[in-house]
Image (cartoon, rainbow, N blue to C red; front, side, top):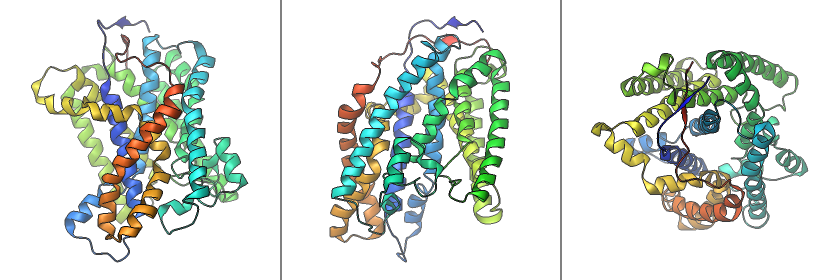
Length: 399
């Protein structure tokens, strides 16, 4: 698997931009969940707008795909080896993820103690009250395992524990990737996921407290992560089946995966409710891979047809938000409750206007606070970030 290096240096600003868009979508989704529409009449335009933010699970799926994609890049630069070895990888991941997470937990608990500890009938109610079991499971990053603890303290935290556990599988997946092939590694992961899903279903039947909901234990996220690895592999490959694919192919792939996801979602909601929701997540993962590869190809092309897309992906405000996207994800949920409880409720606005204000002006406030949190609680633990990525080797095979 020897690689040749691409000349010059490259910028991957689209990764930050996509991270920002996904994080903002999650905030808008949770803003929507904050509002009780009751019997409030929505016109068609309002229904369409709100419908855009109904499923907040998809951007979380994308975060997992993006994580696999990003973690694979330094591996590619090191010819399929972990720079510094396995131990250093775990140390870097722990330093990068855990301190901001624990500080965000402390902030959430502080706000619960003084401002948002009483139930108000909003989505935040699932995060309170907090007991000792909630604290212990969150400290150990196993809160998603139990139904009673999954949403406590901060209902966005469940995915942090999921991703944290995935990190421990990365060296093993990479070993299979290097010793066999990406295709075989993905096959092993997919088989393992099927087994784990069956085991989880059985465990839930025996122990109903085991959380097998979309906000609980989600073994199939391991497959999404691996698909992200494949996306990075394909993006920087010169040979293999996918090396022949051009921008048009990946555009078609993005369109087809969008249609597939919409068809599965519609079928499950209206016609075949027995369709596993995990299948929709995998379809969303495929969509995310197609998007990442397409964005990288757009970055490379000189075709003027893609100038608009390049402009969006390189837009400095979006790139900047992406740099503190983790902080935004960590603390947005309690901030939404603070804004709703102490700003919107006294204004007595309509439910729709509550959403508009919360997802616009409220979003700006949350972005500002998240940036401060980033500077104080996340940036000090980040590895020094280079504005320009190091050269990436071009792989000899993609699948």
